[in-house]
Image 1 (tube, rainbow, N blue to C red):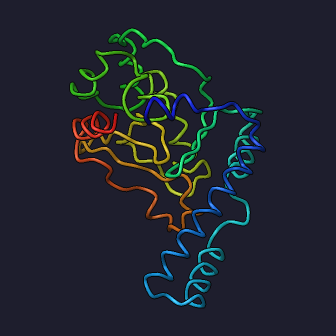
Image 2 (cartoon, helix red, strand yellow):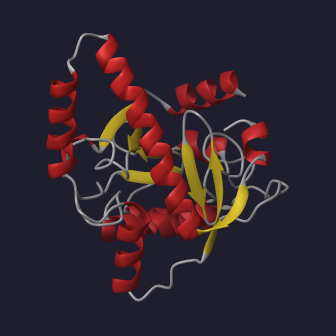
Length: 229
């Protein structure tokens, strides 16, 4: 995310975020409808496709579904979150507003905790990247996750899955390294960066489409971020 977008983040009640999220998706659906009609689809055909997608979606979606699952685990959902909205994406984060200085790089004891959770060594290329700082830079709404957050989120994702609701399993080879509209995971098996779409239902996707290859390597992901910055 660019610096300008980061500065546009505001703190809002989660109810307001959900309302804005629904409005954003409604605008996107209207744009998709106009594009489909321009491409030759009839209004009847488009409406049938929309109806099929709606029938396959859960009646409870978005923040309400996440909040429901968090309460089931005994967690108290936050009342407010930082929120950003552009023409291309929307996102909410529990991270506080405002720029923060980069944290010192993690040490070997920090990585050892992640290795214990992952059940295998952490590749040198990931450690070299984090020798700059303990996250806070790079792709993602607040930059790369800290090493501590990687471990905590990894354990959480293995329990609940990438969409908060256990729809699909979280592979043992994945490490969650950045959170964006599509979240990014480092695949310890291949070195690729895999994206996950926690909003798959509203985007008209099937559960098997939650994961996708975002970048062929860690270097490619960082080069993409630098080119966009």
